[in-house]
Amino acid sequence: MASRPCPCAVCKGQIPQKPATRNNHLERNGPFTNPASLSSQLITNPIPSQSTLERRSPASSDSGGGPFYGYPSDDSSPDLASPSIHLAAFGNREDIDPGSDSDSLSLHSYHKSDSTCSRSASPEDDMPLTSDYDEDSEMEDGNDLEIQVLEDAPDYISRERLFADTDSDEEDGLVDDDLELPPAFSEHRSLRNAYIHVFANATFHGATHVQSQIHLTSVHSALSSAQVPLDISAFARTLATVERRLGVNVDDTIIYFFVCPECWKRHHPSELKEPDFSSTCTRDNCSGQLYTRKRLASGREKRTPTKIMPFFPPNIAIQRMMRRPAKYEECNHWRKENDHGPAPPISLEDWLANTDMDLPLGDIHDGWRWRNIPAFLKREWDERRRNLKDVPLFKSPPRFVSLPCGLLLTINIDWYFFAFA
Image (tube, rainbow, N blue to C red; front, side, top):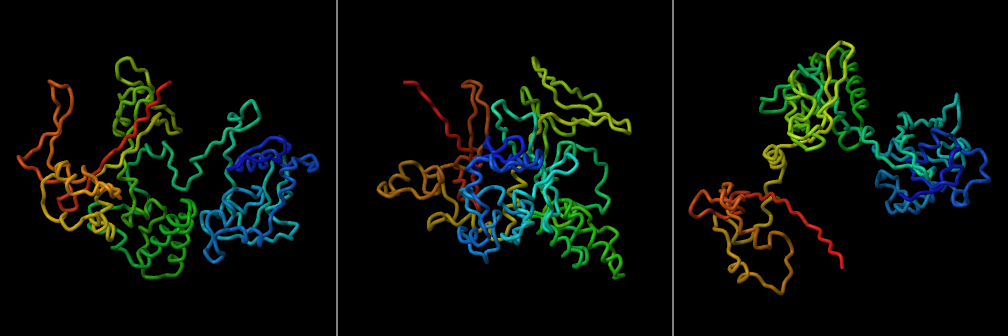
């Protein structure tokens, strides 16, 4: 986003700041009370009307509005004229009255009260504005270091929560991972539908964990007071439990290894609970701190890793991916007439003989290596050459992609080489 003069009481319209920083400055410092001395760049950009914004928007008004409500992507309008950022994730369009003196989008809607600058609340602004301004990040030239606050994300989970001691599941019901169907499918359809609505709101409309919990609490209260013959003793009360009940939670599958911040030696999260596990890296000539200690009010010591490394097992990820409707067919759409059934790896000579060199290759499936890689290989260490080699387990291994839904997972690295003239 483009930087524009900040109209706060500190910058006084003379120092350009990014949109998020300008909002934080206005909330923290209040507006500059002498508009006449503001930069001409800010004064000459009036707040556009709703009709003007819709004319400048490439999207039609009946499209539901994107996260920027049809505002131009070049950030040509002042940031102060933007609607409430809190409803952007929900896809709702705010009602803007350009002629109203109490318009919450106006510069004058920022005011000071009890030494604190706050934004005039509108009916839609029911969530607090989270500040991503850090006083320690202010640089000598007056500009701020723009930092994206990850803690504000709806799905953010802190390290303390990731490595918290959990002896049992949440209070609103245990989950059995051994069931063939997700647990929600053994509950009443009314409860299951409530779970689906909560999950859809969080996934597609940006509902936070707190909003999801409030939604579930309201449903639980309504069912309790309605005296319906439903067993709601184990009704889910948090978004995480809803995801587990529906079988869509992947957090439990992710392994959060923690690593040494100096040498990156990897440790399993279970090691963190060992009483004699040292906080200093055990590798030779390394003094990296693996975790920090904190004494809780109960007297128990809490350990928080310094650096974590999330890992999602590929075999589980592939299973989840292939369970999606039509995903199997999509992974086989590349097959041509001669690509069905077992076949040996194709040689470079055969590939060149059957490829028109005057036609461009349209996809990776048209390349030689796609049909050349054999299946059933075992990786061994060559002591004489001091390197790894792939040894076939059979005398004539088949072509890997000729296997039923043969999937190749590759990592391509483009090395950048810079030579001085």
